[in-house]
Image 1 (cartoon, one colour):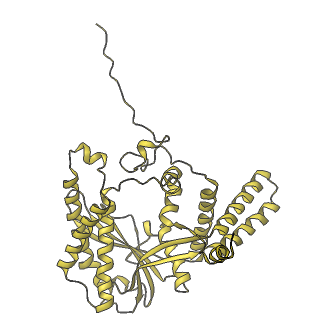
Image 2 (cartoon, helix red, strand yellow):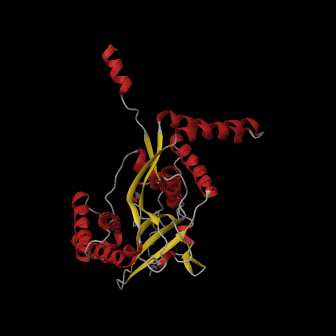
Image 3 (cartoon, helix red, strand yellow):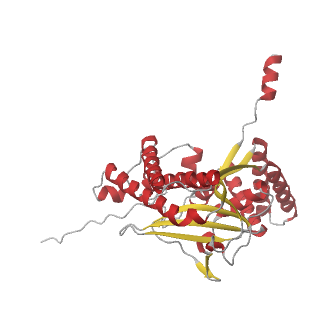
Length: 354
């Protein structure tokens, strides 16, 4: 190796891996799907609902970004047009694959895309009308990439120490295995990465911002926009829509951890802003579902993160249960190639002999 080569090598940036919450969720739901996607690198054409989500997300970000810069939202027509053009652009960039139900119904790609276009426009308009006016965004689509190396090494030391103390040899072996996997990940360099949809710095004004009345005077709020065909499950506390799916969201916990790093504190409030478009009647409804996170929630998530890193580094990719709703031809693009997917039974009618 020449002196010049050594010098160049010394300034070459260290390659770092990233884990996103979407990948961690996939690993926990179905390890084989994670393996197909992130280890083997097999990509499948997206379902149309993914293009709808992307079109609405980008439109919401553009609209709220305009409000941050100018103090006003975009014109409704511009919002609707942007949603339509974004949907069409996504389809040109990555064409969809029809799901089995659409194929059975005899729908064409053109028909499905037109339905998705109308849905994207309706949901973007819904957000513009009901959600955007009361959101006080300071950032949109704020990316984060948290260096987890130091935490991984500390966690590995804890696991090694625990492994030295337990009497169960098998348990000790598992603890040392996880610790070794975390140390290996830290040597490569691992980031927990993602993107917060909407960051708010709230200024109290209960008349102008009724969603926060009686809930939060001032503070930091993190919101994530979701599109759905039905209203999310939720509970009701103090007359506000809280709990349910937002309480259980690891995605929101990841965003809380990101705020702890970026803002130096946990959010005062977090919300999943559901934009609902019913399949049959095409009714629209805005359903904000609120929640909070504390350090217990963050530490629990970090334990899950540690387990995910262990599984990833060791190649522990457990398939989903055969009766899980996501293990189907409709909801999994890898279903046809997966040896663990349960195939539907085929019944043959046996006629009686004469």
